[in-house]
Image 1 (cartoon, helix red, strand yellow):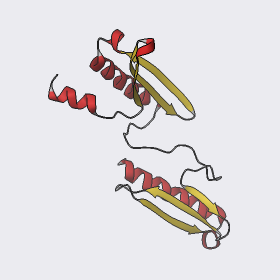
Image 2 (image 1 turned 90 degrees about the horizontal axis):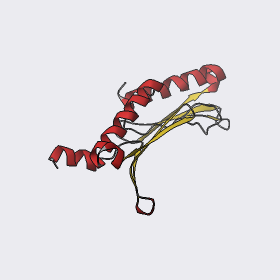
Image 3 (image 1 turned 120 degrees about the vertical axis):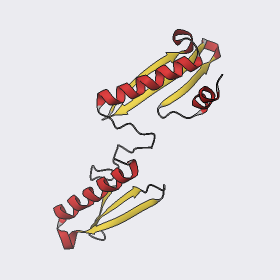
Image 4 (image 1 turned 30 degrees about the vertical axis):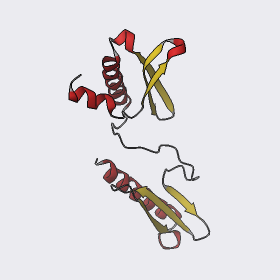
Length: 145
């Protein structure tokens, strides 16, 4: 096996998992693409694809094609797509105690970043819009888009 092939095989590929289940004679790669609340998945068997390397190449190609077809941004960085904050926007939460919206994000260096927007100063709607804009800008910077 060439050095490039060996390196590709040893790399982690986002949304792709290796399955080796001897008891069921199942060997291959399982791909799962999640986007807008739906999961798209497919299994690539080593036997059907012509070996472990070929099945991995097929899995990566299917993942990339599926993401493109769905309109999902291709990145190997982790994306949070579900908000638990109550605002419905990932990384933006209302802090009623301090009368502000708090914005959090991950920097390009992988550190936690955060700021807040005063509701008293900007009004509730204005502060929320500013907070969402900051979050979008920080996420675009992190992803390099």
